[in-house]
Length: 122
Image (spheres, one colour):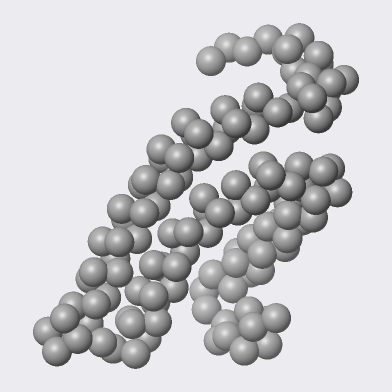
């Protein structure tokens, strides 16, 4: 709601609008396909670094990036980089995807046979 009604229209307005529609569709799909656990893990891993991104944006908009504010914008930037790298480059591929793949045969047995029959070249 705030993206449409409250926020100023920036250059990336339509890209972010499509991003939010796709995100809500994926969340709804995970609930309708009864993949609650996997949907929650994916959402958690992708949203945890957004806390630092939003903090950084808020500090940048308020102009509190100098020595008086203990360089909070720069600290938020470093926290964003570290949390993004850890959660999206380590946790997601090495812990979330294997956990989701292990539960896939019990949730969708027919689809699993089709996936196993696919030629994988990577």
